[in-house]
Image (cartoon, rainbow, N blue to C red; front, side, top):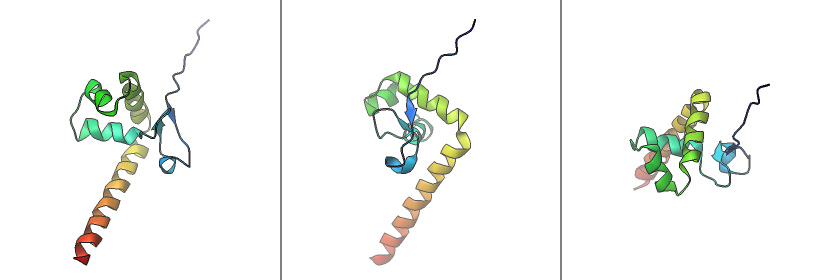
Length: 94
């Protein structure tokens, strides 16, 4: 008989990071890991060192991302749009 194992390293809590998926025991969002990989062009071991987490948690975030790519990509875009909007408003006040 087969046993399916589960690794529970990702959680959501509406009170933490607006309910976005995070690494268990932290407020580190999955999207933070993904942005470091995609835009910072960092390898998993370097990301783990940067955030001071085990590399297994980086791989869990990467696996979660690939299962929820559209959602995480939308979260990244939403944050990027927000940052651009705030910058434009701030620069407009000067």
